[in-house]
Image (cartoon, rainbow, N blue to C red; front, top):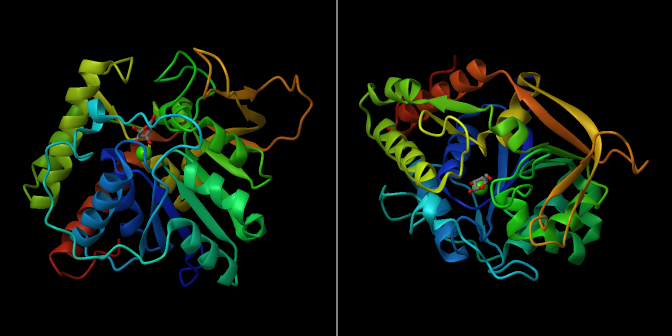
Length: 329
Ligand code: BDR
Ligand code: CA
């Protein structure tokens, strides 16, 4: 990549434990120019996810606009994931009060303005339900041509974590997801097929912990909270007692290092109905529909390199957070 040319991105998220790890990776990257952060209701309510986004971004000493998204999914009653991410959304870690203010623009206005004013195409990174982006596409369809692609953590080709087939982010607001999936904007889907392979082990967490810094301790507390609670809820179904899936990091990692991932171009639609199937991303691997391939469905990640990328991000941000010069390696 041209070292002077950064990739302009907007990040839409619902922090959320793995969402703040995703933000950390994005903040650490020299390749990204983060134009805006917007928040979704999902892992917790809108009030809590925007607070967490502001608190973590302030803690990481980043000066980025953070805009409030919608409060509720299009039609369904909001179901939060307090049993996985805690009552605050960030486990039992208490970050300092945010210094960054909430934007005076709504998420939808801010996304529209940033996209329409940009001279180059922007990558949308989305790691929560798609309520804001669905609403943006309905209200301002002209923005679609300014989006290079959406790197999305959500969905699953095979096996869900909310119903037997639906994944949390799509399950929370399937109607918004359907609008986005049939928008014509290219999507790269980091669904559970790949994010279940993007895990970190307890031994690897111990390697982070041994550095002993405050950031490392907070990261480890968050990860341990996640594993503790995923054990109780069986949110992760296999090896759940030994590994933690870093779902949302995949969406950023793909943008900065696509060579770590492999996937297939497929037609994907979101199922809106059904006690067991609402919120399922139906991946047409066998081309039964004959419809255009609208999504790159990731299925493989080079796990060790992905984890090293996460370690490097923690190290970099630890220095940065203390006001030291960033390690450029
Ligand atoms: C997704 O659900 C949320 O709880 C996580 O933050 C992630 O975005 C995984 O299914
Ligand atoms: Ca998330």
